[in-house]
Length: 86
Image (cartoon, rainbow, N blue to C red; front, side, top):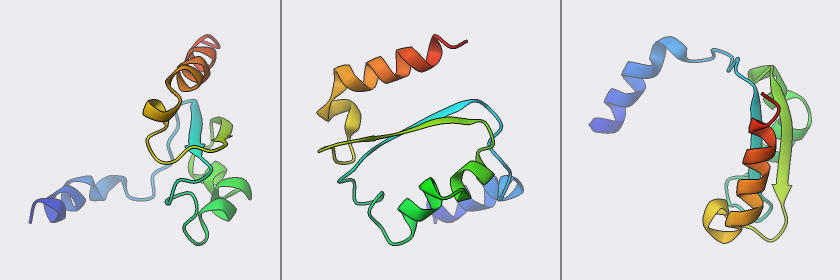
């Protein structure tokens, strides 16, 4: 029941573009990244259409889903680099 309530509460924003500057970091062996169609969506324009201010996409080699735990220094460096732009 609780998960349905979350969908109900977020319904007004369904399909709304994310307008803040964004850097996306994902691991190349993350199951979500390797789900059918996801890589095409990310790398062939679909993601950029949903996130118009997408500054960068980083695909980290040899990393699963918990990137901040698997390569904390590298992830922190990417985040700090991104924040320094502002």
